[in-house]
Image 1 (tube, rainbow, N blue to C red):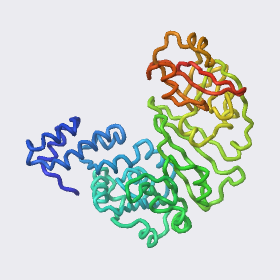
Image 2: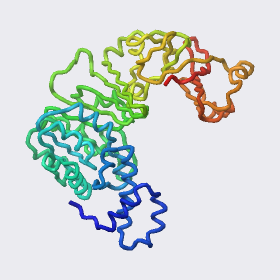
Image 3: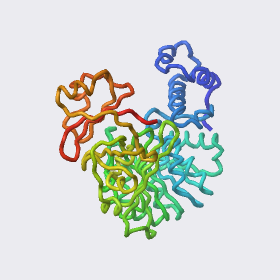
Image 4: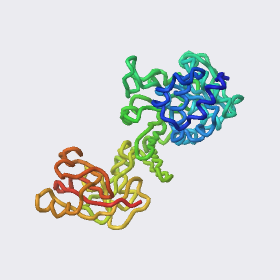
Length: 398
């Protein structure tokens, strides 16, 4: 266990909600406190209150440096990953802060955590004991690829490759990540029945599936309509090759609702899209569906029509309550003529603007319409099937 002095721990506990920058200016008042460590713990605990609430509730958890806190999974996404795999044995080759390993391990009899940064490995080992996982997870401070080469066969291997280059810049392609899963794919699948890989949400899904030969399923995970993770399940077991790789899109909303929508490559490629002009209701797919580009199949699964091939906005005459995205009631539609716009915008001084397939940025459109940001009104700038450029005024349906 990592040792923390009584004075330092007391300071952390007493200032859990204090502003870290203000505390830093007062460091000379507390010479007995390891101030750099204390400030990092306070900042980490504050971040964990929203990202890892069950961990934040435990005073003995130790937090790593800011970058590791930013890169680690949230509790929601870690739980989701844990729902995808189970078995007797698990190896996490890129352990990091240990969040994913702690949640994944609960579905296994034994787990091995591997992390090349000694300090992170020590923090993870401490936290696993606090979490009651000491007897379930074995911690190894070392290189994940070296461990892979010498390990026995297991049920599941998990990897979250580092997505930063030697200069700290972000990278998104599989080949630029460390380790390079495309080079290790065959060895990984010699050592495990299933491999779960977490990749950058910026990565092109089609390119990822072309780069890796044994993708069985793709999971796109969004939180509060922001795409957070791209997960690939690899296996040499026979899948549904005839229908193509299934893609599951999940969005965890602020209200606690979980939107889940899945489709296969073949479904999207063969779907016949239905088009229509704006009706009574408007729909915008959530970030996970947008990332997965499941645009055509939406009009087959739900009683909605698409406004235009590249607009990715949908409409219906009757409310579709289970549409995987945001729902709106349309208040009006306008062209871009001055007189028409004047009537359309009467009484509106602020609005939430969205641009979809429209020759203007949000910033330029906001300036042109002289609207402040925010409020209860939404305006979508888009293109209809006949080529008309329009603004659609709407109010959100909660």
